[in-house]
Image (tube, rainbow, N blue to C red):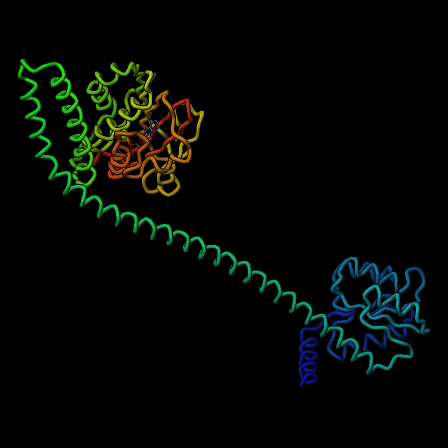
Length: 434
Ligand SMILES: Nc1ncnc2c1ncn2[C@@H]1O[C@H](COP(=O)(O)OP(=O)(O)OP(=O)(O)O)[C@@H](O)[C@H]1O
Ligand SMILES: [Mg+2]
């Protein structure tokens, strides 16, 4: 079976006309080898010494070199060494008139395929040539297969990596789904409770106000009623937050100019800001492109962020509100550039929202407050996450939803003790009515 295979390969080699270089200083031997091997189907060239052989070899690499060991100038062993330096794939058969164990070992050590004794039996020589060429071809094919195998392995590895990535994403999405299902359930429940609480709270507030109107009340009772009123106000705020969190309001989109809307919001919060000794610095870029949005919702998002800023600057501070036109993803940076913005979700996952080179609108709110611990950065947007004794933890989550509903993204950069920047990036209005 193996013999038949070798025979078939031998035939193929001749058909492909394997190239042979016969190197011998005796013309008679060169001629006879050349004639017989050409008849056998090989492409044969001859050289009378090592130098001539090297010149021929540099012109074209032969598949096999048949070299006499004893030649003037460069001997067969040296020639074998030089050829292997140029092309280690070339088979070299060494022929010698004197058998010497040393030279045979040297030749084999240098990579000779066979060591043949003179007088040469032409049939044996032919078989040696054929088997050397078959070995060479098998080696080449093997190398090709190995290369292919490596490529396949590499591809498999990258498929495996992709799969691992997809699995991770799937797991994350699954977790998010479970979380949002839970939140939806909580939302519905909270909406119901908030709705039920709303009426009694209004009644309590009304009655307390009535009692407060009675001017004959002693100071202690009046004080108690004032405390009741404050707590009712707080409860009403919580109810309001819960309601806007669970209610999916219909959007009324119109082209919006960010600067006047921000100014309006700042004016609205004027009392709260000055009461907390907060100075507002505006850095509004003039002639901003418009965005498409729902003014009320956007204002709510701004109010939530400014309220947080106020609450973070207990001893007063500076709130900087800035607007700018950004030219693509790489142009987005926070006001101070001192900290990196982290976007939720990441900018890279928002290619559809924030294009690479398109124009976007950036609105920054920067405070000089207490800052957010880095472990809380991503949690800050989660519903019900709060570090405040009286917070509902819904402000930023509502803001995040509003920004998302406007095809925007929200990012935060914060340093403990230094302050926080919230950046909102929105696509600009393309001129179409919403
Ligand atoms: N500007 C800020 N500076 C420091 N911490 C902030 C800032 N904005 C948000 N945070 C942190 O993020 C948390 C979540 O904010 P979020 O507005 O969602 O809820 P809250 O302010 O705690 O409660 P609510 O807004 O419902 O009254 C805050 O409790 C606070 O720890
Ligand atoms: Mg808040």
